[in-house]
Image (cartoon, rainbow, N blue to C red; front, side, top):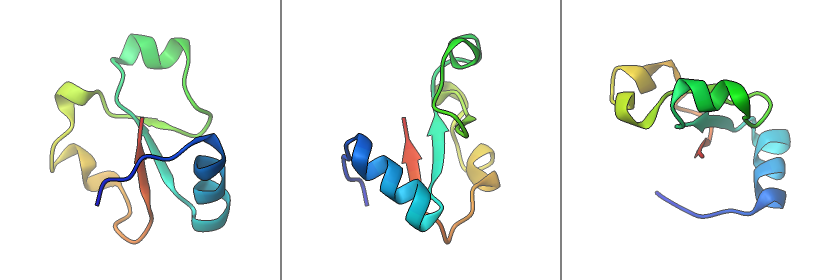
Length: 63
């Protein structure tokens, strides 16, 4: 299920539900600036194999 959220919603998901934040920017851009705690999986590399590191029982926020 895909849902848009705002900053408050993101903070709540992280704090209350242990949400995982995935930043899909290219690696260079990710290292220049990203949400603290976010993991980087560049959009061009996002697939079943690369997303297997995510916990299936926690919300995932893709940024």
